[in-house]
Length: 328
Ligand code: DAS
Image (tube, rainbow, N blue to C red; front, side, top):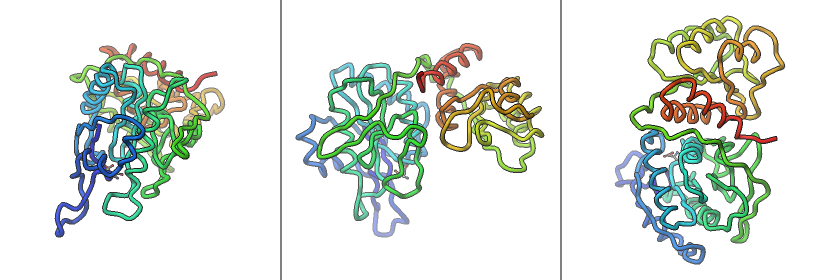
């Protein structure tokens, strides 16, 4: 299922100001003859756009198409897209796809115009992973630069490097080498977020806290009609004492999730006791993102809110998803 991105981008004309997603999936597959030795592949042009233009509506439709393909007998599905939002779409697909089967999301950091275009190698590795026998739950994974990352932990960590995708909290699940797929660890299935109703999809904001912040942005969030908010707090989930009242007030009107701006590790729950520490913030009604980073917490909260018609059920579903990211 091809969605566009750098992997499908070229110069539309000699005068063009830069590359744009213009190539179809047939073009890409034709450049990877070795794929035929791995699997029988059907290419679908689902969208042709920069990944920053994708929406949750696109992802709900895409998940439906993936479910159909898996029901129809596909062993796995490879989604080929822009890398800019890939970590969010991969996690959304893990929550949205309901049929058992491997879903692999990949892309490229160098376009077909550049020397060292990484698209063909990434797609070939992705097809290998999607076609590999499954001995444990695989769910949705990101395959880039011959590494396999769980969707729940993968992050784009570099603006241009082909080694941009990493799992800072957990490390990769495995890798591809000499045409083989190697697994070193596995994850368990995520809890069911529910079935999102497209008409109920509503915007959830992310707000990153920074040194010296006051409460103005938090107070204005309450007036902007967001369905919820994710606060990227300091360290293990902390905020300046001067904004805690505003956060508590916001949490009384919409669900407010507390994440960490560090990009790895968990939000704590029982360590720091000062005003604005995680104990205080959770006590004031904020909800922990656990080991999910802010982008993924926003995906989970958006889908949970669209799947349930009341806040309590949505937050319960969100909390179950958070709890299922890791296991004892
Ligand atoms: N940054 C580009 C990419 O890596 C564009 C996009 O995300 O669509 O594919």
